[in-house]
Image 1 (cartoon, helix red, strand yellow):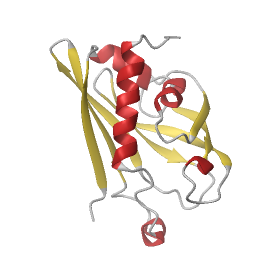
Image 2 (spheres, rainbow, N blue to C red):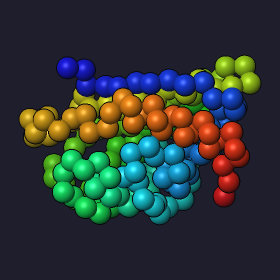
Image 3 (tube, helix red, strand yellow):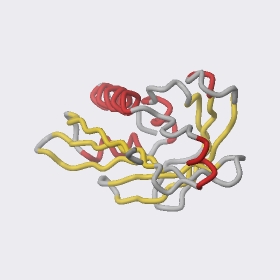
Length: 158
């Protein structure tokens, strides 16, 4: 079984526009295809180590009766207009250790966006639980479609 999912999509916008949305906590809520991300608190991401809080609703997946809860997104990789990745910190111990991210590559006037979900470094307790992957390839693809639409429509900056 693979421990990583990657999907790609070319978006008709420059990398800076796509990256700006991905650095906005509310941008993640705006493009989430799973329905789990309900709201977010925190400022724009500007570096590795930055954090923000996301208010979640697991009932959107209807897989585990977790209801509503908060997680802290902790940015692990940051290269302006090229790469942003993060892990999730929550109340669960030990921390799970899965990583989400986006790589951006200029493609003429467009951007090739690679979205990935990596659970290769998860704690053995969670590997043994059999719940991974939590997010499907279809959900990652759906999020890229929403990202495309949102950026092209002029996602509000601020």
